[in-house]
Image 1 (tube, helix red, strand yellow):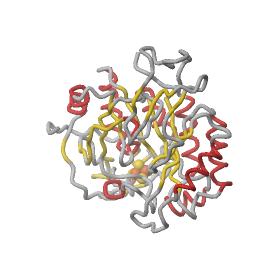
Image 2 (image 1 turned 60 degrees about the horizontal axis):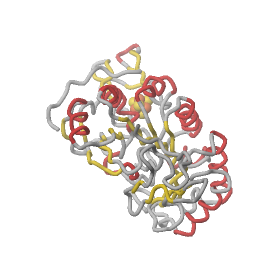
Image 3 (image 1 turned 90 degrees about the horizontal axis):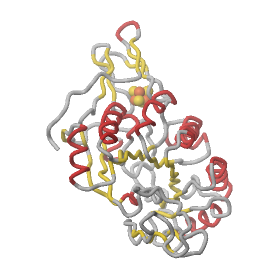
Length: 337
Ligand code: SF4
């Protein structure tokens, strides 16, 4: 991955008087003076023109099991090329990927959309996942790569905080096949104080993904003392169930990182979250924890195991048409035709 590429002009901004530039990409809606870089570290005002800073720059790349995103109901058992640029428009004190999401200094390598598509095809990956940091503020590169990937028969996946304005998200969604959106809490104060963001745009984006027909899964990182009360978990479950009880919800264990030193999430907390959510949602999973519940997927009709997930890799037992091998009931998975 080293062919490099020339950055296009940024999308979703407007020039202002006195050389300022107004960014319209995310709800922060920065007005940047000449030379100023946005708090996301992904866009800068260069002589009155907004510039995407990391077009064609890759800070992390790997071929992962798709279950690691996590996506449990999309192409089970397949691998996916996973890539990231530095930067994020949230500044969560507990960020588990802070070394790349919160550092503009992280070392990058050059790669064009064509490079990534070639690599995904060579690796026989299901597609490309834009993940690890925040792909929505890598907007222009994600858009251009996803268009090309779609033309080549690859799938496009976003693993995202969902903090984008609805218009740019609508521009991107036709190229996106699946998304895992991080819903950190249902508490607006938590979003404001701990993440330096706002909750309502995230809820709106989750609705937008769902209504656009993108395969959607939701992840909640459970942090002791911050979002782990029964009432807090139930409110989040109610929101997801209100969209559809068939949306997979992942509860993930937090570990102390960056600016947060709350203790790691106990296994019992995740088991409690699972049992609360399973009353309203059909598919509830646990991540970053060793547990027998919330790991595999069994047939809702006959109980036969459909997908096992030892570690992070899925082992599919679906039949050739993606149905239950025992009773031939339709499975809940998006499955390659
Ligand atoms: S994408 Fe970055 S520059 Fe644009 S409004 Fe959001 S934080 Fe500001």
